[in-house]
Every structure is written in structure tokens, then in C-alpha cells.
Image 1 (spheres, rainbow, N blue to C red):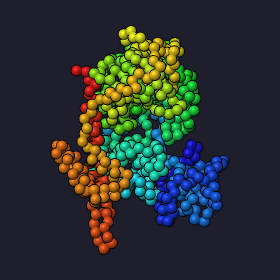
Image 2 (cartoon, rainbow, N blue to C red):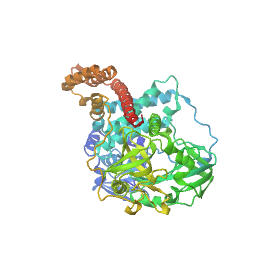
Image 3 (tube, helix red, strand yellow):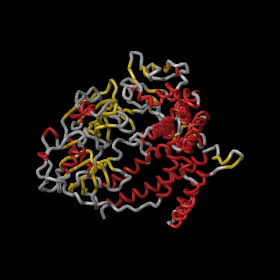
Length: 596
């Protein structure tokens, strides 16, 4: 959908609410039909030919007057509904500020506690009820009318300054679209996390005592704070390729205080744009160097800015110049490889508990020194020097234009290769991380297999975008060395599969995912949790089942209660418990890395 306009959530909500019910039901059966129509770009916007009628869009669809159809029912017609349903929704992305706006450093910083106005509480309650209604029927059955209610509530939250809540609502909306369109990008775990975030944030605001922590409110735009004159050392560049149609590169640099910053070049486009961005000049402090050079360079900057999540910005007064440096051998950078891995993992878990916008750049990175024992063509078995057991290093993104797989296959043919590497840990999978960048280890003992890189590499390789050659290795076998190796970390099961299945079932199928015929099975699962000495999990599972199946009978038959809020509250409590317990067991699994 690259190039098509975006549509305001309020426009969709208004047109869907005004459309006849029969048209909404027709769209629910054919949500993607507009993609089959003929789309043509014009000087004034877009024209979509449906065969018999024509829909016209005037630029970005911000008001209902920006969309019209040639049929008599416009804009309350099926053609308009279908076209709007396939447009990307304007989610007010948090972009980097312009050079002029980034100079507003004297604005007041957001206080830690903020007052909650009655209008904000009402907006949060409106979005809570919309989310509860979606949960009651499940994401699969959340039709256009429920989607419109959700979008109207998101718009109201955005107008009232509840930015974190509005962003969570938009993610839930995107999850609904992905699932109903059978898009491969849909993730049940991600959708569960998004809905839990929405309910949790909404509950905090609704039940606040008049004030709330600023992190629950969020910000409309990413805030940039001035930083002192800095010496930044390039670490590596990561290719970015998303299913939503964005591509480019992201370069990580380390400051003298050990914090990480990022400079990006990510725009709408296909995979071919990655290599264009890699060779394009970095947009920072009037630099005239490419990301290909920046990721190995040392940069001196003045009057720059940085956001909480590490994005580096600069206005018209920012100055940056590239100087000679030592790369990964710079003392401050080299210190990161001296920190034991288990300490770095603990720090990752601490950062994970914070909102995404408050996590520093590279919060899930681990700097590891050790030996590649071999590989199976898909993964590398890596023995860190500061850990008792090895790690499996996996492919970060397995997409054809990227070089991760090619490099992993070559490294799989190496035995006892000493390296330094930067990996991104998968906290949900103890013992597993994806490898991002690699370098030879100057402190390692002599080995038959060594990494010998050309001078232009400066001893480091960004594995997603640069290709290792056979000539860069002093020794390698013809085939992967560990084809039949099955080492895995021992992880204790948390015993919460029954609760987890119930939560995922409700998420996708709503109340009907727990039919009365399954109640005996749920009762057995509750009893099993009690025997396992998990009384809280047992209580939550029982309450969740009762809330989902609660019904009332009258002359019209058996019906579910009109207010789904009790179900949403129970779902939220069970989700928070499940996430907390899972994190505890995951953290316990990662502690096996600690040397005895």
C-alpha cells in the first residue's frame, strides 16, 4: 500500500457508524475487496474504479469531504467503506523533529506526576469499553462497527493527550486488521501483549486518584534533550526491513559515558532501499559520510540532542565531524566485553519492564567474547568466556536480500573460532540470541581458525548487510560442523499452559472460545494448578472461565451480559499474572549462564 494516502480514524468511525448495517455485514465478508479494484494516482489525489462507480480521494483523508463516490449513496456507500478499510490509518507516528523544532530545548520537561482531568478519564473509559467489547467477541469477529467504536475512542484519547493509551489502541486495531485479512504478519503473542497494554494503561488512568505517573500518559512527540559535546564511536549498522513496508538502516554509536545512540535512514520502500540507505549520507550534524563509513567511524559532535530511547538529533546549530578512531578497541567500548554475560542479561530484564519509549537504545544487546564451537547452518553454538554453558546464535532476519543467513552458513563451517560479537537476546528463550555484528578477538589465544578481515573492514562486520568471504577465515570445513548437535538449556516449565491457552482463546474467539462443554476440563486444570501449589493461577483461571461463560436467561433466550467490563478486568489480571510468572521463569532459565 506504499504511496496510498492515510485516513483519519475519526473519518472511518463516522462513515462506518452512518452506513447501513447490511453494508457493514457485506464488508465484513469481503474486507480486502477494494485491493482488487483499479487504483490510479492523480494530481489531486487518487481515483479508484470499482467497475461501475468511481471513488475519489483528495490527498490525506482527514475529513469526510476528502472522500466521495459517484454513486447516489455516497459517502455512506459500500464503495467508500471498502476503500477506507484498506487504507493505512493515521496513527500519528512519532517522527524525529525538524532541525528548527529540535532547538526547543528550554521547554518544560514533563513532570513525573500529572493530573488526570475528568475529560481524560472519560476518554480512557470510552476506550476501555471499546476494548472490552472487542475482547467479548474476539479479534476474529470484531467487525467494522466494533472497529469504528475502537477508532472513535482512540481519536478521543489522542485529543485528550492520552498518547500511550491511544497508541496501544491503534496497535490493537492493526492486530484486528491483520488477523481478519489473514496476513502472515499477525502474531498472537504480539496481539495479546497489545491488548493487555491497552487494558492496563486504561485501568491505571480510570482508577487513578487524580494523578498518574507521566509514563502512563505518554508524549505526542519524542522529546529530545541537549547532550554535552560527545565523542561517538561507531559499532555496527543493522538493516531494517518491516512487513509494513519500511526499509533502511540503523547505525549504533557509543558515547564516552557508555550509552548507545542511533542514527537512522528508514523510509517507505522495498528491500532494495536498504543498500541505497547504507551508501547514502547520514542525516546528522551536516555529516558528509555514509552509514557504511559511519558504523566504523569516530564522530565528534557539538550541540546535538538525544531522546530517551537513544535517537540522536541535531538542528541547524549541531556540528559533527569524522575523525580517526580505534573502533571496538576504544577503551570505553572494549569495557562492554569485560562485563559478565549474566549481569548484562539481568540489565536486559530490568529494561524490559519499562515502556518501549523509555528503553535505551540497544537495551537488549549483549556484548559477548568467546569461541564459536561450530554450527548447523541455521544456528551457531557459541561458548562465551564469561558463561558456564554455550548459547545458540540465530539468524536475526531471514529475508533474501539480507546477509544474515549467508554469514551464518559460512560461520557454521568454523570450529573453535575466537570472536567478539554483539547479539540481541531473546528473553523469552533462555540460551538463544540473534547475532548482529562480529569481530576478531585480540585477547584470544591462538587457534587454527582465525577471522582475518581486510583493512577496510576495520576488524568488524555488520552481519546483516555485509558479506563474509571464505578468504576472511584461515580455516573452514566444507559443511556445517554440528549437524546433529542438540544442546539446549534446561528450562523449568511454569505450569501455566492451561491459563495461557484460555487467554489466547479469549483473545481470538471471545466468550465463545470457552463453550460450556469444556468447563469440566477447565475444572480439572484449576485443580491441577492447586495441586502444583499455584493457588493464584488456579483462582484466576477459574474466575476467567466463570466471567467468560456467565450468561442470563429471559424470554428471548440465553444471552451474555451487556457489560463486558468484568471479563476485561479478569482478563487483565490473569494476563499480568501470566506475564510476571513467565518473566520469572525466563529469568531463572537465563541464570544458568552464571559461572559457578
